[in-house]
Image (tube, rainbow, N blue to C red):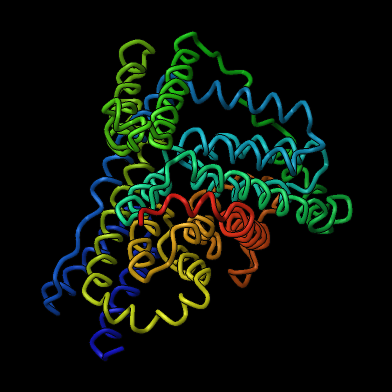
Length: 459
């Protein structure tokens, strides 16, 4: 590795670090500073922005934003809350499953802001330490991203893999990530079931409870969505959204199966590539929500889902472009340095994915930035699919909005960011979930069903 490569790599890492400290739009914008230094200062050839992934995110969050604006998301949260309140004693397991599957449906983990206060409230009223379900539930809301058919990380994995000769489809990715991540989450929930002191034995909590003002704050009201009125238009918007997801999955299945002449069903009936299909279907569903389900466009763009999605667009735009510029200019050197490692231990790329995610707070950006490099290094598609859950590492430093919000939602004060920063409530469930999910995913694609997942490679 030359001195120039090291200096330029430090510039890339510095841009990512500074961007993460500012958060939000800064991740993408400050990556632009690093890009400018590499291109104008060192004369590197600019890489290519990940436009396909960006277009899909825009279409998906526009559709999800209209779902939220029409009240459809409130109905989904109400259904989830009714189930949670029906079985409050199982909140440590059911809470994470709810946040996980909400993310799978909507394609963004930011839906957690509505359901998390309810999870905290149910645990507290049942005298269960809220840290137990809350820590896992926040992790689960992000783990679900690699299991959603409309999430940028999944679509980017499929798009980039297909371009590199690994002809995997969205359903085939979900066949791996969903069982792997659910198993990982349940292991994390099991480890959290008796985590920390029971509330009756926790002197800090009992001290707060003895204070009348703190007692009123903790027990004086209930967080709920059950008092919200759900209109027929809100329900209709959910049906529109679910129908759109079903159409996307159906088109994806058409990419999987082949007719007699070797063409896929999608090719035989002239269905466009999946990135185009997702964009068209999501935009049509968004239009239907606006025209028939009374989703106000102004309310949609003001909502948390649409705004967080647009932030993700800018982040991926800047981060992925910066990474593609650096690695694209030094691909030969990277191959020379890493070939021995990835040849003998191809699964070790999971550590790279995880560490990059710690820095850039975006699973989609990790896939877009690092997956092309992984394929260039000669790592097989089944290995990369198996370790896909490892692209979630930004729980490690507790500065992600959903983690910070969860700490604030927990009125008991048991969900915390520790004195030493890394001893926080999300570390243990996050590490267990990602580790188990990655191992299980790898076993599925490279041990249990090795021949099946290897068959997607175009020779």
